[in-house]
Every structure is written in structure tokens, then in C-alpha cells.
Image (cartoon, rainbow, N blue to C red; front, side):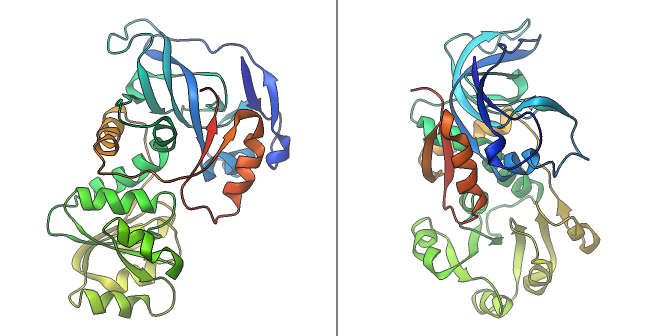
Length: 307
């Protein structure tokens, strides 16, 4: 099969289109014919070796943890899926090697969700990692109807999904963003506020008593979080582990087909918009990574592997 791989750590120019063996399909696994993958910052951070102390890597590496495609085959004892099923998955494994920038990928069945017919392929490919990150943080914080929620970086790749998910969970949502993204957030039912100096005062002008929940999807905002959080409020971050010293949660996303199915259904029903910034063919994956590295992309960067 064709796959984008790198033989050593480095910048996106180390990626090469290569021929690789077909993945083995172990008991409890599903082999997916990839139609879409997506670029996430973790992909190029892993490629640069920044997570080498955290995860074991076997070269050559095919990057990518997001996938949407069609089941090609199933391993032993996988009665819930069959060849031809349209699916999506957060395909992270316990080591770094066989990712989704490839024609085929094998993943544990427990990580796989069914793609609803109403959900487009680009959106399905861009949903798993970012959507699960936001959903698992927000459900850990037990957001419910009547909660006021502040989302840091609400127009970012994870934050824009988190803001919408928080609304679906019943919260009133305030989201930080630059002025140029305020109209976009407003169209999603989010109350936008400018980030940066004076944020606490701007939030307190909207919610004098303080917010119930703060979700940090950017880092470096702990003092602002504590300044707007009401007494007894809850907060969590996906970036800053120091929140634990201030009574918050530090969240690292886990693969979960069950959670992903909730999100896929939410998106298919029109309650969760998955913005797509740009789509690249597989052989231009390095270019897609470089776009992601700019940090100025509103929406998911998608890799099209097949029609």
C-alpha cells in the first residue's frame, strides 16, 4: 500500500510517499480503507521527536491518528463491524508507527464508530481527535443545563468543537477569540470575548458572579481562569498540567468508539459543525503539516486518500 512515512525525526520535509506492507489485522481489530485522514498538531510534534520520552516509536513511521473510511476486513471476534461499513476512528495505539496517512490502517474495534450517512467524509475525518478531546474534557467537568462555561481559544481546532459541545450539553457558552472570529462564533451561538489583557473584566461584565466551568484549550491562561471562576467552580486544561495544583483537571484524550459515536451522531444531526479549512491529497501531506504549523488555520486540515 501507499503511505506517507518518515525514517527519522525532523520537519515535514522528512515525509516521503513510500510502499509499505499491508497492516496485519489482529483479533479485535478492524482494517480500514482510508478515505480521509486529518492533520493534528500532535502529528508534527511526534515527527519532530517532541514526545519521544512519552511514546515508543518504531521507524519508519506513518503519521496520523484521525481516520474516516470503509471497513476492509475484521479480525477474529469482531461481530459489531463487517466489510463495507463506513466508519471513523481516533486510531491512536500504544506505540507510534502505523498511522492514518496511508491507504489502509488497522485499529482496535473499541476505537471505531459508525459514520452516519448524513455526515460528510471531510467532517468525519476531522472529527475524532479534536472532538474527543473536547468531549472528554467537558464531560469530566460534568457540564449540565444552566452552567455558564468559558472556553479559552473557542475558535481553535479543539475549542470550536468544545464550545458547540458545551452548548449541546446545556451550557451557556462564552468563548475567547480574536475580534476577526467573533462573528463566526456568534453564528454558532457562542458569546465571543476578546482574549488577552482585561479578559477577566470582560467576562465578569457578562457574568458578574463568575462562571461555573472553564475549559482551557490553549494554555498559559490559568490566572485568567481563576479570576473568572466562581467559588466551587470546575476547570480543566488539555495543555497546562499545572491546573492540577489549582484544583483542576489535566486531560489527555483516550480512544473511545462509544464517545465518538455520540459526536458523529451530533454532527450528522446538525448540532455540531466541523469546520474544514483545506484538503490535500496524500502525497502533499508535508504541505498540509506546514499549514497546520502556522497556527493560523480556522478549521481542520484534511488529507484525502481516496474518493
